[in-house]
Length: 501
Image (tube, rainbow, N blue to C red; front, side):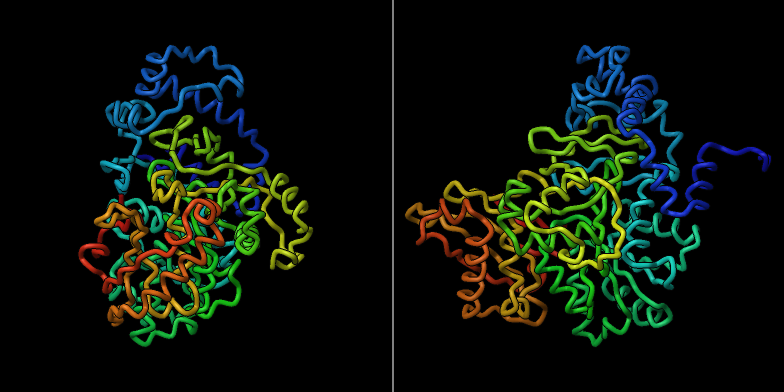
């Protein structure tokens, strides 16, 4: 092939690789995101056979969608009525898989796994979210960095995306080496011991419970985490600020707003947003002001709070759940991802904070000369069906998690648990929590009352429904302790679910 021939993706790569992050984000902010998403709709109506049929069945004439207001009235697409209703090639731009060069697979936590074809060019929007974290939080543009990918490898979306996006950053000029041991702890420890001493810092990237397992098991094997100046990048689960502080203490972190960050992503949309030092600082303030958090989010639990780029992924809300649009090999137009949550404009967030007495970054535990990104916020509670109903109160796993993260509990437990309601022989309902112990800790029933009381205390503090709906004599949960990696409740290699019905 002649070297003079280039494709549109070549230009996209060149722009990403040659343009500083600040300039890229400024270019995105100059785009009218409403106009862009309207243009995406018309392109999909013309070039995606499945979407064209989807609209026809619902009586939508694309020529009549001439404004953003009309765009907002378009039918939502979902997994059942769109992704599983039409053949995979017909859901792609051009009606063919030929434009895709890789594939990811969803985890299947809510049903049958789904295949998501990708192209490297569309991956760059995801890489930009990684770059924000590596640049703004980790300062990896100026520090030699070892990135250790602890997500499962293979077709599963976490490891594939993370590795590829980190490679893009290395190609862009970041002094970054990417190691891919996956979720094999022995390989992770070998990489850390052999390579981390040669870098100014190390980043562990993985699901929060697994990263905690790695840190705890590594400490037991004599790894001095603090000596490697570790940073943490998470994805996949909501965690509490108590948990962030706990993990920070175990790795010697002194800057919780800078030393870790979580990515909000899905297999279908890629990374949709990322924690920033500002969003973490706000969330940490809200964690000690639960009344303010309840006023802001309308819930007693604390969601993941990230900032997002509307020129890359455009968010709307529908009945308290999130809807996203974005360009991919399988483009999304008003796709109902069904995560509970909402969106807040940047100034809307600051108006709220000022009304609650926060007027400066210093009051949020950030330096006053810190320059936050003027990007909107999206908050995410997770799937709406991960709650347990108990005496009319919705019990959230996040509330239980805080109870297990108290100083007198964390030396015993991994943080994993299964929340369920059960009945006695007399038909009386009770709250039952199965808790996983750390490796080497033997189950002792003497621990149960301490754990149960800690969880009840946090449920009373954080969950107003529990405090008001549950009879006093039914508020103390029953605890069952299980050994580490128990095959019935905590099997190795299976995506953990925190609730059972």
